Length: 392
Length: 148
Ligand SMILES: [Zn+2]
Image (cartoon, rainbow over all chains, first blue to last red):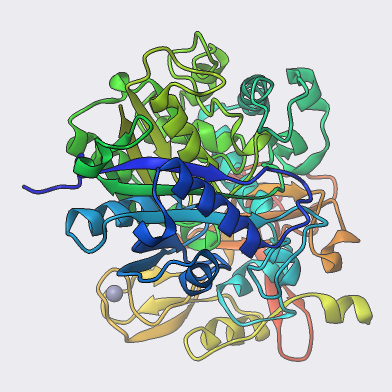
């Protein structure tokens, strides 16, 4: 059977600086990150013939080809969702390349979410989308917002409180994720938050939505990230070590923005667990073969549920798994979010995790896992989701 | 009251009007498939179990269990920030479906997952009432059974 296995590779990565206030628009940020990725790939804008973005991205491919001077696109698509879209962009790019619909595809995310960022008008044009909820709620948010359920932190708090109840997970386990990722960010000059934190700092940080504290929450960042994906054959001539997409998959699952029907349908066949099964079968690997993982971490306990979904521990055992130091670089069994993740490096809707996955394969991470051969990158596992396995 | 006017209100539509009409009449009515009797919430045009588009609005007991909750401190929408910290809950009805809601009238009762609750209605304006839940008062002489 023909699969996506090893059909495409990431040969270029690019980003803007990450900050709380970049002073530039999302459009300019996207252009800068994409141009940097094209340069890193050793290509020119004229070589790009495909684009994949998140469907909520404010930068359309049309706007981008005008700015970047790309003469002709043959493939363009948007992946449903926000944080659920991350790895799906690579899956679509690899499919387009494997079928000859495109040669060199850019995937990217640009996002101004700092409180004082320059925003483009419109629901997804920067700032906090939930602050612009209309007073008359006609869409499915009408089962959330009239009850004061407004923000992703509040939605996720409901999900993680249930995890605590079912498995004995504690807020200290959440804190151990936040502390581990901060120690990784301390070494990363790109990271917005680099000052050390302790578990006690975590436990004394203010409540946002119990059981989530401020230090459980991702940053609010201005910035953009992009990659260039090409075929396995063309990747051999790349100027940097290619990160081959060994496997990739997507899954629609229960979503945190429709919580009244979230708990009904979450089971072994949904979300991250479905993606895990697909990619391990495609790659013919198991969790023990994976050297590092970049898990989508809008909130620290998302790392816990991802460890379970992707089979690094049994359901309910992620808290003790983290408490035993397993996600800590350099000695942990599975260093996680070695760039600091969304909690400490930047929140670019998870796309910075793809760049860190590539750096691990290239051997250029500031928390480099020795002999990293196989790296897992995931999308948000409480949305439509996805994941890729990158190999050297 | 300006506070009230800023609070988000649902706009019923063709597919969910029966749910909100029930609330307005202080009855919790959950969408039920006429072909296979499966209950579903949130409302939607087709039964996910059998795909029938034939449904009615089934009055349920209004009893349920606190399945999970959060205490919101903020940030949150301005209309709610004045009331923080406040709770948001997911209640599982005895009949199965879940609802996002708030727990009210629980003074002195610490919220905990598993708490038996019953529906009460909060009239927001002339057309909209929101289903909220309060702890079930243990009946004198009979043992209140906890589900967790
Ligand atoms: Zn049915």
